[in-house]
Image (cartoon, rainbow, N blue to C red; front, side, top):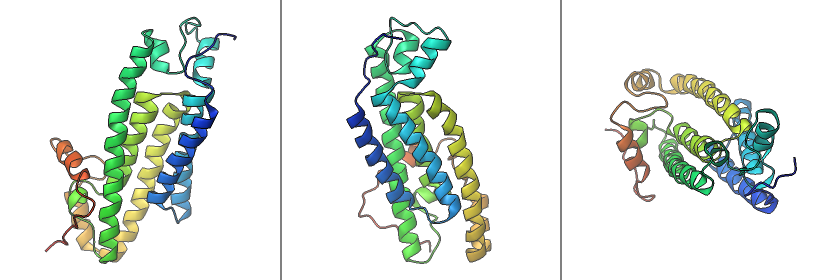
Amino acid sequence: MKEDIAHSGAWGLAAIMIVVASWVLYRYLAPKTWREWASAGVVQAFIIALYAEMYGFPLTIYLLARFFGLDRYNLNANLWSSLIGIGETGMLISMLLGYALLFVGIGIFIQGWRELYRARQQNRLATTGLYGLLRHPQYTGLFIGLFGEGIVHWPTLFSVGLFPVIVLAYGLLARSEEKRVVEQFGEEYRAYQRRVPMFFPRLGQWRQLVQRSNMAAGKDEQPPG
């Protein structure tokens, strides 16, 4: 296949994006147990595969053009542009939607980390702020960000295939973590489990989730009274 594909071959940029995204991942997830390392490893594979295709070699486009009859004369490294056939407009639309989800996810992810860190410093449960809506807002933010970047903005065979694996891995990890928290806090945490959903807020609470993720970094969460 000799046709040139737009927006490919920028391996230097791919390396930079992989390093930056990986640093954020390990900085805020900070895996310690083998389960945490295994789950983070799947996300790491997602990141490498995504940015290697986004800026380097568009393997998904080549495979679809070679084996599934994708139009070889209207190719773009972005799958939406090639599938829909509207060129740069398709890529722009997917980029705007994808980045919107990515930044919302990052906000939830980082704010959840802050709230959990404060709670651990005070040796208490995190049950207010984002934790008043979800039991695992960090993982929810991770899911939203990866979905925005790897499904909406720049879908590839690897990102689409790995995304449900990531959700499953962190679902199992969350259940394992909750068993340890129950051992520490007992009925207090069981009552919290009954009251608050695991990953996705109840209908009508998504706006609150986004608003709370934008809380000022220096605003301290008050312990429940």
